[in-house]
Image 1 (cartoon, rainbow, N blue to C red):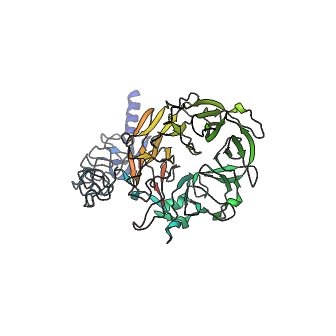
Image 2: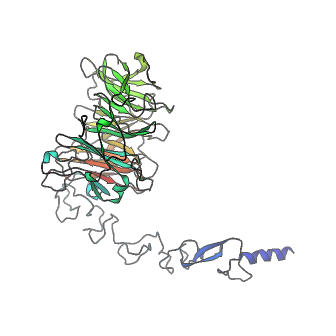
Image 3: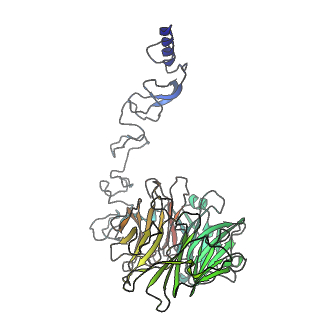
Length: 563
């Protein structure tokens, strides 16, 4: 009886009592759709048939374009220029050096350092860009050229060069305020006597290789009695009490809160709420109802935006004889409430020493704070003239967790008397040593200096779960700039630009040495691959080499392999 039962189970598993499996017979418990694999490379050929699971000679993967050769299957290494399609993609690999430039256009397909996709490097005696001329229009760094950006938003050129748009003075990522399911983009710029912001639908940007300001979804310009008087250095969307606002920061000047109306193509500052001069705006500090404007005068003052016209002052705090110069807010300790850091300098000398203050939230409305609500955490010494912290370097969009501990870091940019700028990062904000940051990003080349615009940003451009860094550097004498890209993990200690970064984004000479990368921003994933995108502002971008350029914003789509 036991012998008969065992024979019956074997017959079911084999589809019958034959020694050879019958693929067509699905009389077993578990059947699958599979493909005949004659060369044992784990890929088979059509047609698919139903077989018993585990039947030898059949695999679940189709697509083998030569089932007699085990070296040919989808995903195999395709040897270049052998007239064999090893990876079954329909064509032989025509890129011998793997630089992305096929032999048809690559002037040396055995050398990945020579390609039509690269810029010419200076003083090498080699024609890197394959234009047939050595050292013509050369760059001091290689990398990815601005001309191969995935998308571009251009300004508008007019006959009067002073009124060219200089698009890209500011670039910013926004949530999906257009309702098309894709994060949106804001591009700021100015003419000789006008400032503006244009907001673009993310889907429109993806659908078109090149857009200009006429394609904007919303525009904010000089219409009305109130208008932008300085560069836009901060911009973010904010939702509260059923309303959606656009928050605009003008340099270290005014803060504007403008309601977004999808029915209108033009927005006016007259429709919004404006904070006083000399200060910065933050997402949430006083409460979660409206953004907060922090005013820098002889004291530091907190405001919020509850009225249609102007914000309401909540309190003023004297910083022990020093003048506030910048502020940063974030939830650095993870308690769900924002704290504040404030930098200040001596009131009498308007210089040294600098002092740094910390305040714990929550900061409630309509409360008179005592003067010790901000605690002194450190100061520079009179002999540290080469260590002064740059104004306004902590922008609202900078809230990054570099060490994956669930808490954001504190970022500051320092500058010395030689105009050399370094980025300093503290991961533990409860113990800040001003001269010993956890991470210090420095530039080693004396000719290229970090610009004074604080254009560093963090985001995961290659979907590996680690935070990456971009930082702009310019060479005033050469009239050009580069954007350095360093892939995470960034770690601790010192990150040396020129030697450690994984690549540079380069551009030809501009009319202004810091044009390319004048502003940068990481954007939320736009195309669904899970990677951040990179937007690079270029306000002196030219479409005609003989004329002043209208500016542009270059969009590079992130990908698992990088840009």
